[in-house]
Length: 163
Picture 1 (cartoon, one colour):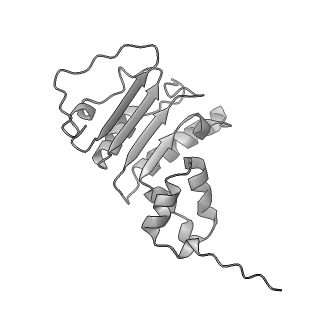
Picture 2 (picture 1 turned 90 degrees about the horizontal axis):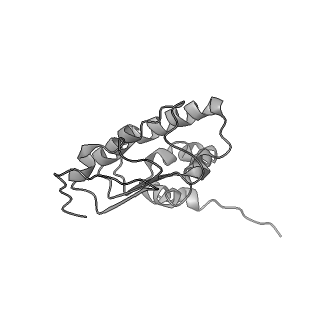
Picture 3 (picture 1 turned 30 degrees about the vertical axis):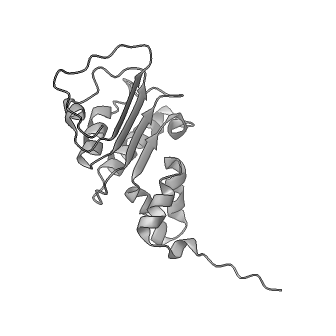
């Protein structure tokens, strides 16, 4: 008896594949790029981007800068698909690492420019990294800020009409 192995998932339209990939951790979504040439750059068009401790687990100091550059390229990809969700969580790691100069404020600005609907930031320190434009963004429907152990001062001109 012969078993027919058919790849039905790859025949789905790209938007559906990207939607499926958006449920995976970013590391796993990127790993799908080796499946075939059709999958090579699909991860760059996902609408949900989540970076957490898992994203940075097993990274050495040497490849931490490569990871930072990867995030920069992913967010600033020429596809510029709208973002549904952008999440950044500290869980295991610190995004405020002076040695690696993560541009969290820039990442947030890019997400806002891409029409993000949901932003969730769970960091140990938020005060100097939140751009003012975050508090006047019309596309945001959900905003979760968690600065563990720190008080945060909101700007006086907050206008989040769709929140």
